[in-house]
Image 1 (cartoon, rainbow, N blue to C red):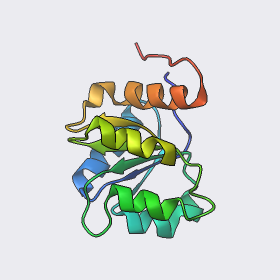
Image 2 (spheres, helix red, strand yellow):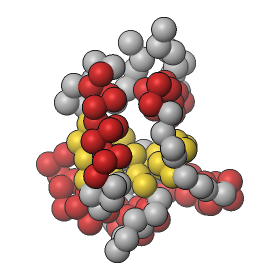
Image 3 (cartoon, one colour):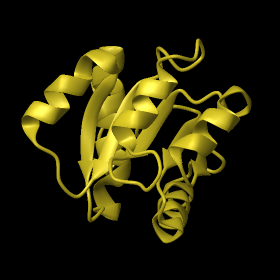
Length: 137
């Protein structure tokens, strides 16, 4: 089994994608590891209850996009040190580099490759922790 954080929050305005990600992680044995939020605002409201170890964050959302969510998150004591992975269909390398100092540790591209999803999350998580990633068989 690959190494994943115990508490992941996926923030995306597309409900179908949130559900697909939850079901996918559960099918790999990570029951209850994923909470979801439909917006950055919802994440900020539920942050204390959710206590995520890792945030998967859609880049383009109405009202509060990924960068605005990060800016607000970093103003909360609880949110300052939570690593973030962008989940997006497109991102420029310079944008990713600009957000690394704010805790963005990588990107998972849409459309999601569900077969490789846990390996991708695990690789980013292990790199963040300074550990070697274990790939699922």
